[in-house]
Length: 91
Image (cartoon, rainbow, N blue to C red):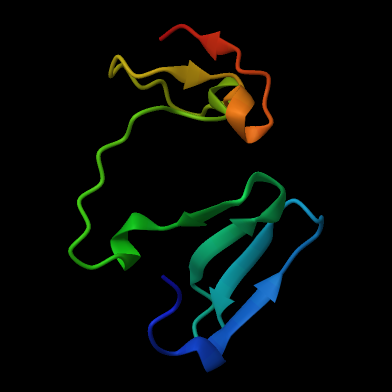
């Protein structure tokens, strides 16, 4: 699935080859980030109509701003499957 409408108003910015930020040319709002090396696209859940999201893990928890006590795995960086260390942290 891709962008369903307004694709002419989507621009891309990237500082590194790891992440390509997609944003609206009109308002500057962040839409998604493509991570080609991980074959992963981060999409802001509120943009997905009719989509119910149930989190299963936390990534980059080593740099957290807020502690979340929800019983889910908390990865220091990323799971090994996504190119990270796979190291988990305690709540």
